[in-house]
Length: 235
Image 1 (tube, rainbow, N blue to C red):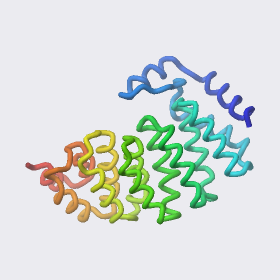
Image 2 (image 1 turned 90 degrees about the vertical axis):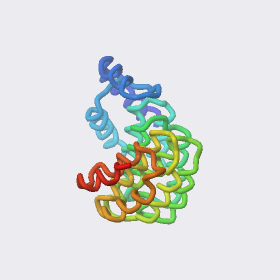
Image 3 (image 1 turned 90 degrees about the horizontal axis):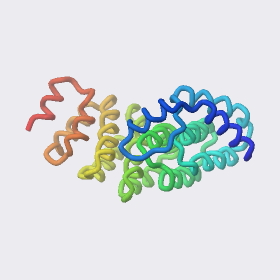
């Protein structure tokens, strides 16, 4: 198992680019650790190395993901997110324990948060809807990234028109949060839900617009027709 990680890291290091690293560091408000590799190449490298472990058990793959998460390096977190999603057909209810641990202990920026939650966590919740109660628990966390995770885990289900009432409930929990990363997260969730239920999302937004932060409001109505956007943003 150590050889797998060592070989992966060796290739990542050999592809590191100082210019890409410095550009990436400027892109985030919080401090991030980077090799300096463009996302498309990270995905390619991750897929090539996954081909060598794809017959391993899900438990073994998750253990490798944990090692990558612990490094704190963003490119390694992206590969961990992708590897954990590649085994999604074998997800079980208990896999939420690993995702919960990763979100609470290792996620430290919006990119790693969204990459894990849009796909791995969202898919697991679709497969096992009772886990929605766990997302609502995340929404009450003091950790900004855990709160954001509660919303962005529902982006794909929201586009499908799934879990609308739960989406509104999570939006209500996050409604007055002052953190813009949280605001953007639940605004994005509402925007995704509007693709399937524009009228319901618009009604929800209008009923809360007087107290909804402008950031989340803008995100929520971004894809709505111009006349609705004007109405929603009017004082």
